Length: 622
Image (cartoon, one colour):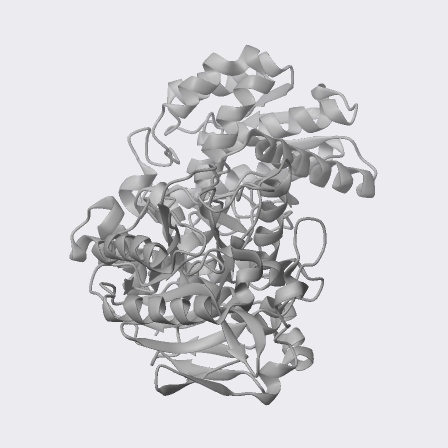
């Protein structure tokens, strides 16, 4: 299955008998029928799975080779599967034996890839039986089997659009210091399949995981690995049954339980994301000048496309939000180091910021307290300023006061309503209309006050705006958009919420107050406590999802709308409206990001106009 840039793959480990080729193929056909039902595009079987890896010196016997070829014909003639099959067997060329990966579709072998690196240490004896295909694959371009010539050697298999390109290597190839997969990825392969026969012993599974995650991460690719299982001979070793699908350094699906029975795993590969990551990867561009291989041939294959995609798992709807506690510890340590370094550079030890009782200013306060404690500064040098206007809700004001008291920082309360009235009167405002001017003058007066207080106390103004607000332009230019250092700008709103929750464990005395803040609807309180941010700009969870899919995955509008419909169950029109609203705000508000204060990167992307999102302030959305 391939739809909307997502590809479904499988790793299958059949029950086997060493030397019983028809039995082995029948076990494969059963798994192929299951994979066909799941509409899988590609499936990988273990090394030497036609004969079994444990046949030993029977490899030399012509009868076993003939049986293997007959079994492959049986497989092709009875193949119930429309997709691509990768499986292990061997070939004789001039009485030299090559351990190979066969790539087939329906009744045809598309290509054969010989193993490059033969293990011949400890429990392995492959140099006894096989010859490396490294040199031969440059001189022999095809071999004749089943009455037709089959491409042989260095091959990359490509669909007609060029979007999906894959290749194969065999078992120990991935363990070599300079592996075939490096050349294959650098020459365009998006996925590398590895048919393996790998014994189980303590520590081996973890090593495979580390290696495969590293391989896929370095090349912004996917890697599909499958080993044979314990139904092989157990005279010296038990084989691992390990199956693993990885994408860009992350494990998509894995099964490592040692088993005697057939088993299969499925995983979804985001092909278009991998293309986007490579286009943005300067290392990938540079390595190609050293690894371009003119001997690699592109072999066509048929990729069946669908209108819809059946995902194995719900994709991450909170992709920015960390899933591990130590990631949150990194977040708060990054914030702490960033702000303390800035204070040390300036030569001061005081901060001023506006506290509203809302999420962002709460996180700023928590982060500053943590930073000052960690680096042995006095909490009273954190000056939290609440500046209520006529629109400020009593609940949020009381929370701000209580939070400052609970954390032992200096609280300053400066009502601004009379100043706001004077400012409105000075510019000829009616004083009655609660329009955008009425809203923004409050935000600007608060920033004006904080800047003046910073001068008075020898401090810097800490900005509280987060990345989601920056993306959507949800700030007042010259108001909360401005500061001397942005402590939250590296975090989306969904991460802000999750980090405030994490801080309940760091500052348990404030936990009940934090619960109240987390349960309160988000509001700027510029026209009253009933003014709800998400009524205007949409749910932050959805906007953060769109931001991730756009900047990290490189998704276009159509793909994002498809995913919103699929996982948030919006109608097509509703999904498109979300995307269009996001786009309108994102592009039109770049001018604010161009003049945003400095702030450290925390997540895998930032919106800094200086380092990552380099756009002019008048870019059109085509």
